[in-house]
Figure (cartoon, rainbow, N blue to C red):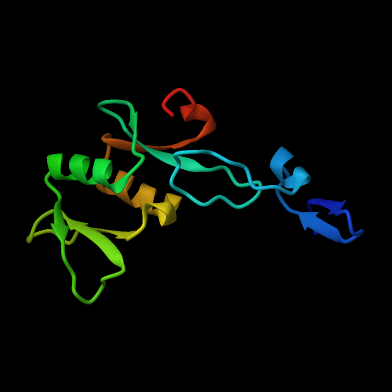
Length: 132
């Protein structure tokens, strides 16, 4: 097993596979405005709207940008736990997001980037500190 073993205050050893400062301190890194829950040691990501160099910090902002790009809200009565957008009736492209922005994860951000090349980008929070 590769990684670093650390002992907590009770003497219990824990394996840290990809060590970072936060993982050694055994605390959750805090990055306000990211909209994502981050595991200790993980690098949080943000979705950036490139034409304005603007960090997307709510679904209202994201929906506004997607509508500008020709996406429309798709109301699916079978998936009430999701917020969905589709490009057109002739397209198979569908973006599915959790209802709550706090559950918006990086894999959903990358889905938006793939379906809107050169419009959105996923960045590390540390790179985007000036946008927050």
